[in-house]
Every structure is written in C-alpha cells, then in structure tokens.
Image (cartoon, rainbow, N blue to C red; front, side):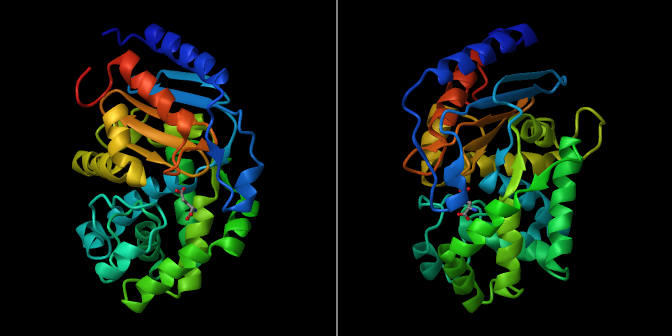
Length: 313
Ligand code: GLU
C-alpha cells in the first residue's frame, strides 16, 4: 500500500471530485432551524498526517456547525478534570439507539450509556460545569479548541446556539430526567446552556483535523510535542469513538470505514487513523441515523484507498 504524501494528495483530489458530482446527498438537519440554512452541495475534506502534511479538498476552509463532534473534546476535558470518576456519571457502551433517545435512561436509572449520545454529552458537560460559572466553563472549552487547532479565530455561532436553545425540548427532557435521578449536579438550564453553546462551535475541516491530531499521535500534538493526554487515554477515546461515535449507525461505520469517528448533525465527521492521520470531512446531508451521508462514503473511500482501516487493509 502506498502511504506517500503524493498518493494521499491524489486520493483526496479524487474523493473531492467524486463527491462533487454525486446526487445522493441525504437530508440537511432541520430540527435545529438554523442548521437548515446550509448549502446541501457543500463538501470539504482535510487530512493531516502525523508528519504534519496537510492535504485538503473541496470546501475545507468553510466553517460549519460542529455539533456533536464537540463531544470528543468535552470528553477529553472532563477526563482531564476528574479522570475515571467520570464513569460514575456516564457509561461507555454503545447504545444502539438514536442520538436523542430517552428510553434507555428510564431502564438504566438516569445514567446515560455513553458520552456521545445527547444524554451522555449533557452529563459530561455537567461535570465540566461543576464549580464554575457557565461562561467560564464555555470559555475553557473554546480555549481548548483554539489551543489544539492553533487558531484563535474559532468561535461559537450564537445564532445556532440560540436556535437550539429555543427548540431543544428533547434535550431539556433528557436533562430534567437525569436531574430527577441526581445524575446532574448543576441547574439544568446552566448545563443545557453550556451544552448548546459547545455544540454551536463553528469550525472548518482543516481546523477540526488540526484539533484532533493528538488522537492520531498517542496523545501528543505532533507539531509541538506537547502531551495533550496520555497515550492510554487517547487510545481509549478512540475506542469510544469507534464503538459509539455514530449513534445507532456505529456498527455500520466500523464495518464500512474501520476508523474511530465522531459525527455531528451539522454534517461533519471527525475520524482518526491511529498513528497515521487526523481527518475531517463535511457534507451537510444526513442519512437516517443522523450521520453525514457523503461524509461516510468519502471516509470509506479514503480508508480503502490508503489502506487505513484499523482492521487491516
Ligand atoms: N446539538 C445537537 C443535539 O443536541 C447535537 C446532535 C448531533 O450532532 O448529533 O441535538
């Protein structure tokens, strides 16, 4: 298998060209009204290998709503704050349920299955919030993203945050339900406010791939050598991305792509080829599980042509 940067460039160019002409683009999420305003024809890809080569295609510098991809970074922050105590608030098993499902919570006494379904991410946000003002907690999350991406311009899209705050009845139900089991410690409106705002961070594929380089490189930022998390923690975050990163489509994603990945309803997917590359793709049209339709196909193609599946080429 050819792993050269030149081959990677060819593959990324091919993928961008192939995705541009596809007509099966899925459906843009509209349950957060502001997300419905994006261009369904957009497609971006950025790949940063562990030697620091950056290869991009399509709309790789257009910022989009990262939504649930932010949950990879909030999980990283919460683990840094409380370590394994986090697992008292949230599990780490795949849910097999849609991203916003409430049914499991009743059976499992308010403890969400994993940090990537909405309920689990709200519980993780609650841990980050503890002892802080909401704007301080949010500032921490944003600072972490800017630090990892080496880009101070990354911002929260306030319109998207306000749009979800107005319409996030399902998330409010999940949060209140967890609160009734004392799984959440802070006032529900504070936790939800921070959650909606970190989901509304806007980033490009290039910025996202930059921010996740530590996950491809044993916890270390390859450009500075800074150890963001221990290698063992990076490995475990990748494991949770593989098993839980695509909701009830996680098995299908592992089967087709074979890489740890986390999707967001803004149409982005962050994927990690451990030891090889950090990858971000974006196409706003979603499949029935709420994952980017062309994003998944682009990653499947990339993994196949580069021989990057963790299960073998
Ligand atoms: N903010 C979105 C929600 O809570 C995130 C969902 C997603 O990206 O999958 O519904």
